[in-house]
Length: 357
Ligand SMILES: [Zn+2]
Ligand SMILES: [Zn+2]
Image (cartoon, rainbow, N blue to C red):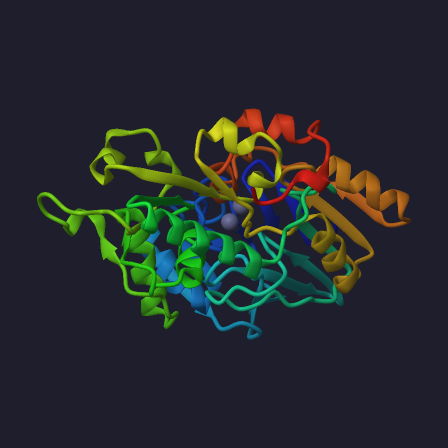
């Protein structure tokens, strides 16, 4: 790619620094953008990440690994390369990695989003010569509605279910999405319960100092229980399994960026779909690139080719990153989507209809 970074079968490799960034397989030294498993791979010997990522990374990685954490904005020089982490706004502790070597500044965004999220620090632009950006939702049909509006709809849905004597089952990815959902729920409506994987994430968030409403682990509730009016936050993989039977009459909902695509909710067979994503939508992707203003942009994940084509038309030097060895599965985004939805996304028209139902 340039004189100090190359794309290898194990992911991006910094040559003078002798480390990988978000490696696809276990390596000796990994510098990671955030704790989702497609970025923080299990089995590396050493991990370097942003300080607020510590609790989540320790939760998911082998305790035998060696960890080092840097506060946002602080620099560590590795083999002549100045490495620093800058808020990505994706989930707690998520970072863009800035690399500076011989006067050249590069930025690897990892997953990121613009806008506010009370559970993590807001994305910050970083000026650079070249940039590797994700493009998971890199099509104009992806335009996120206001977060306030989405949470209003979620709380209204909960209220209606409570009044109808139903339990609410809200699906979101275990780490990141679920905690963002929790932070937006109105706990005066009723009690909040969480699936075990979500509750583990909650604990890591709370240990980092992020305020979340009171939650109860579903597994700690013994015997017969009246679930009417409660909110259960769970991972999408439990949908349609015997695990959900215990809640009795309930209404189900999925929260995901993919809910912006017509038909996604139906294919998921949930009652409601809320458009809430922790990735940049089309417009914020373009805004971010303009703010960082790189000479060259490399696109990865999702619709890389479409975004690159568009940027080239706009006069930018944009290319698709050859991500050999990378599984096409993005942990948090994939959990929200079937390949079917992803395939349909490119042909589904009518962005005007891409609204929270
Ligand atoms: Zn992620
Ligand atoms: Zn990812």
